[in-house]
Amino acid sequence: MPNRPQLAGTLTRVTTPAKSPVLTALRVLAVITAVAAIAQTALGSVLSVNLAAGAIRASHAGTATIILVLTVVTAVVAILWSRKGGSKGLLYHAIGMVVLAVIQFALGEMGVEIVHIVIGVLFLVGSVALATLAIRKPVRA
Image (cartoon, rainbow, N blue to C red; front, top):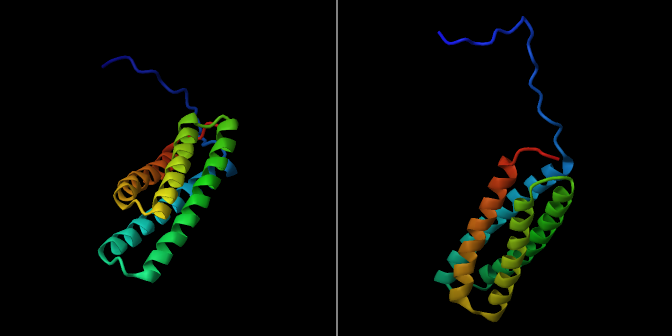
């Protein structure tokens, strides 16, 4: 048997660091953005099959505005988290999502459908990845 250190009858208590309200806000916003992106993808899929659906087009446009605002707010909270010592990767990912959201919004308004769909898929993957990273990141700040 290899030598193993013996505990001298003391137990150490494993504690988790206090959760930051900024990190909690970042996580919640990232998840809401991902859920909105999933809903937006569903609306876009229905819209691509039935181009004459006025109500669906209006819902798709309204959801796009909500997602644009959500990504900006998420990026602002990511900046606050980064300043508290949080992950720079989350910050850059959140800023990248804002850039994609602005491009998506512009493409949708211009009616460039093929590029809009491709970037939409990238946005969906990126938003789900941001939510996953925000939830899995260890608390550092």
